[in-house]
Image (cartoon, rainbow, N blue to C red; front, side, top):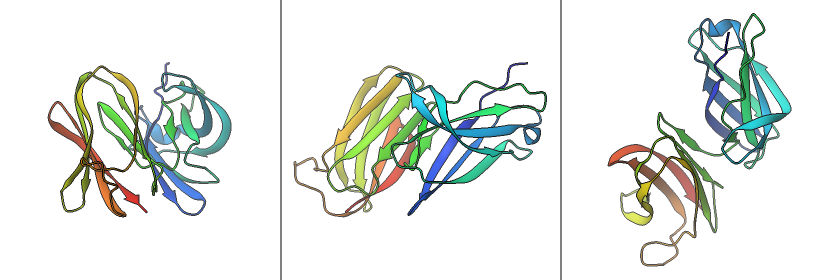
Amino acid sequence: MKMNYPVINATVPLPPTQTIVSGTLDTQLPQYCVVELFKADVNGNGFAQGRTWLSSIMPDISGNWSDTLSGLTWNDMLVATATDSSGNTSEFSMSVPAGIPMLLKDNVELFVYPNPTTTTLNLHYVLLEAGFVNISIYALDGNLQQVLCNKNQSSGSYDLAWNLHDTHRHPIAAGIYVCKMSINGSLAGSLKFVVE
């Protein structure tokens, strides 16, 4: 029997040294499976092999799981596997960065880092389907600060770096901002980040 791999849905840093990692496992009787988390060695397409074992978790009856890990840095990459009660083990999951706010939806993955930032905000996103992508930065009052992407893109993995300057090429003030991502005119989601 082929085992589904677990999906890492969220990483939430808890300063100074802990990170909550949570996800789902879509399989029959997930509560009898074991999800294992690893630090990863990543290849170019987002998949990876586990390098260092971190923990084992048993999902609940709905397939949800969560664990608190120590000692991760924002640039560590994580992967997971699942093993059922018969010993069938899945492939490694898609890799995700640890400790970076991220958005995972049906057709997109978005990560922003470092958070907080002082000079540059990096964005990494994966499109599972082609579409017209708009990524814009807004102040909390709703004022547009910068458009980082506004074009058709094919499915794949993309990286952007933003120098924290507004549309008039002025440095933005310290504060909380929102990165909004739309695909084909529909909001895929948003992430908050802090500029110090």
